[in-house]
Every structure is written in C-alpha cells, then in structure tokens.
Image (cartoon, rainbow, N blue to C red; front, side):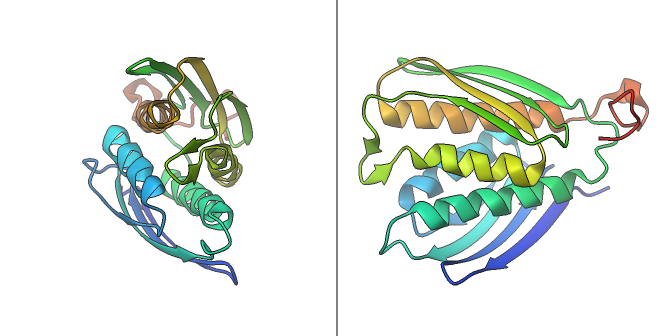
Length: 196
C-alpha cells in the first residue's frame, strides 16, 4: 500500500501544491518562496525519509506568517491522508537530537488528538530575515491538521539557526519512527479502542 498524498490549497493569501510520499528516501524539491523554510523542509524530508515535492507562493510582501502557517496546514493534511487508518504503525516516536550547542527533544503520538506543546524559548527571534517565532505556528497548524500530539522541547542551545535545524530534523526522525510498521500488530490499529 502506497502511503502518499497530494494536497492543493489556494486562498486569497497563498497557493500551495504538495506531493508527499511517506515511504520515500528523503528526496525533496521545495520552493516555498521563503528560503529558510525551504531549508527546514528539506531537512524534515531527509531525516524523516519522506519525499516532498512542494511549490508555494504567498503574500510574503506582507510577512511570512500566512505562507508558513499554510505550509503547516498542507503538510499536516498530507500526513493524515498518507497514514490512512493508521493500521500497523508504531504510533509513538521520540528523538533527542543535537545540533552543535543546541539539544532538542521531539515526542509524538499519532493519536488523532491534536495537541502541540512547544517549549522553545529563544533569546533571539531572528535568523537572517526569518522570524523563528513562526516555527511554532507551522507546527501548530501541522499537528492540528494531522491529528497528532507533539511535544517539542529545547533542552539546550542559544543559536536560533541551530535550534531550528534541530527541531525539524528531530521531528522528521520522530515521524519516521512513529509511522513505521510494527509487525507484531499484524496490521491492526495500535490502540485498545480499535480506532485512532
């Protein structure tokens, strides 16, 4: 069974076309109109072993907020669609990942209960021209649309670029863990309720 999804979303603020293959090799072709997000999404794909083809345009002349949030919406919807009924998946993922002086932990449950707990306090809110505060908005939109519980914790670090990279890499790796097959489930849903 192929676990992929195609999402096309157009609003008055953004237009996004996305193809996601959850069982890829980490290849990405990303053009969001925001170079920093292109870099982060490429890291997410590479470390999550998913293939992402994405083209997006938004009202970045205003600021990056609408585009970043809508990227999260689309990737969340794609993950939900690709996971389908979630039969046979491990469901949980946990990764603690270093990036130079930064140390980030991402813990997730593909639970169909959307909650984001984002405990990342940065002394500097910018890396280049990008507002790193938008990373929380990206993941909030993603988890709400994917139906996931995600905890993102900054354990150590100061440099906002290193911290951002660690977050996206750790999320990708945790997603790979949680979405992988658990053979002992024999294709059943990983819940005593029988449904997620």
